Length: 66
Image 1 (cartoon, one colour):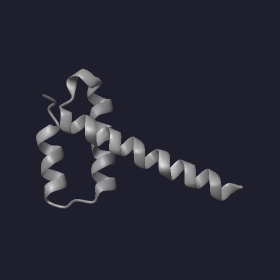
Image 2 (tube, helix red, strand yellow):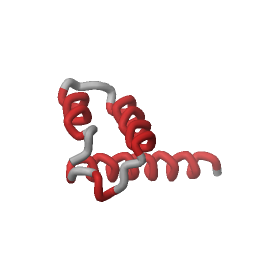
Image 3 (tube, helix red, strand yellow):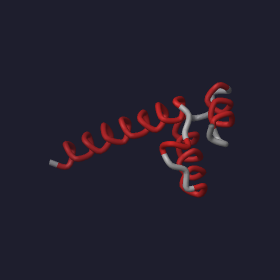
Image 4 (tube, one colour):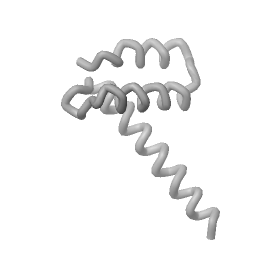
């Protein structure tokens, strides 16, 4: 289990801004050098949502530049 799972759940449950929570989580996992095998299922799902949101945002950005 990751050391950030509980804090991640707490921040999301209390309604913190999802974008700020994502930034906080990304920063912590990079600093700790966590790997996929270190994450809980919940954290992997959260990462996948971050990735999906970024991919959509980047796609829209590219389409608007044309």
